[in-house]
Length: 50
Length: 311
Image 1 (cartoon, each protein chain N blue to C red):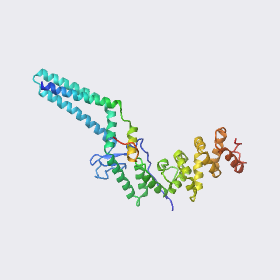
Image 2: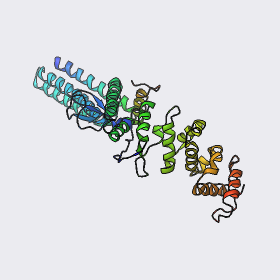
Image 3: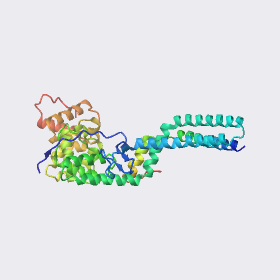
Image 4: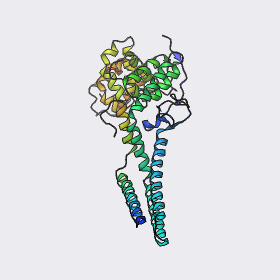
């Protein structure tokens, strides 16, 4: 029985990870955004990291 | 002051500013300079931030795969009989395969997310690293001003404020500029008036007209009165006006400014302006066409290259 419980946990963990990749992939971070945020943070702009 | 002939190493700014940033794998110090060894710990462990982010994202994904593999192994270990053992092994392997496939697909997006997180989490360290870089550039200024300029040029990819730009302008003032140099213009513009910058603009306008663009023209227009008070102020303004007439858009946008210095334009620049106005007589030249006609009548009346302009 315990092995099925562990397998269940493994299943839930895997699904969470895959779901996370899927959701993040739907709203990816663009290089331009990273560049803009970095320059704004370094040069006192309004846009901040995080 | 006699200007010094210099040879600057070719420099190409990366497409994205973070392309200039490297981080030490050992001590985590950030740098924008192209040194081989870390300025902080002295080890040759510098990698680009993108490489670092790829490695961090990869490590995170490997940890996830390991967790699934370990849990599968535990499930197999605690199985009561061989059927359970086989089912758990098969189930675990299927989950591993599914996670691996999802990771492969998500890898490019995860790499960029890791880069964003790396820079965001370490922004204070990035600032500190760049400040150390700037101090390093200033420290070599007395012995080797060319090297100091090259270092500041690299730092300026990330630090776009007036402080670094002012130091670069001051160094450039001591160099004899040439047409074949990797000259910059818009990156050096300051918020307030700086006579050394005005002189530099004048030199660039003479050597590389293509570098005189909107922002430079606006800067010159804003500080026109202060530039006129300088020793060669009117020559600087005439050179800038001469550079502006290379494009119809600039000639139209800054027609008032060009009009004020049209009489000082060298023959080739005036001819260009004349041809521009002749080609587009119905544009709203804001009086520039009349001024050009007057100058043509006064200075180039008998010049065969100047046809009849349409005022």
